[in-house]
Length: 83
Image 1 (tube, helix red, strand yellow):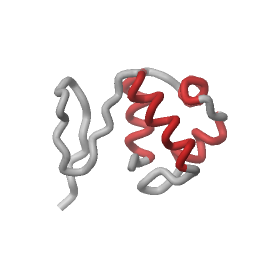
Image 2 (tube, rainbow, N blue to C red):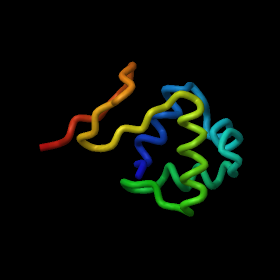
Image 3 (tube, rainbow, N blue to C red):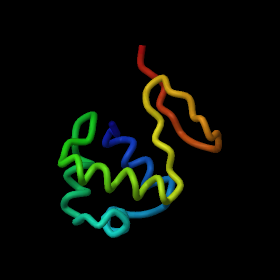
C-alpha cells in the first residue's frame, strides 16, 4: 500500500508535477489529485493505484513500507515513526 504522502514525495524526488504523473500512469489529473488528497493510504481503484506504482517504479522510485529495508540501497527519504 502507498500513502498519499509517499506519492507526493515520490513526485517531488522525480521533480514532476501531477500532470506528468498522470501521463506516465495513463490516468487523469483529477484521479491523481484525488489519490494525493487521501488521508493515510491512497484510496482509489486498485487498477489506478497499480498504474501509479508501476509508473513511479519505472521512473526510479522504490516505495518502502513501514519497518521495511531498502533492498537496492540508494538515496531516499523516510519519515521517522512517531512514538
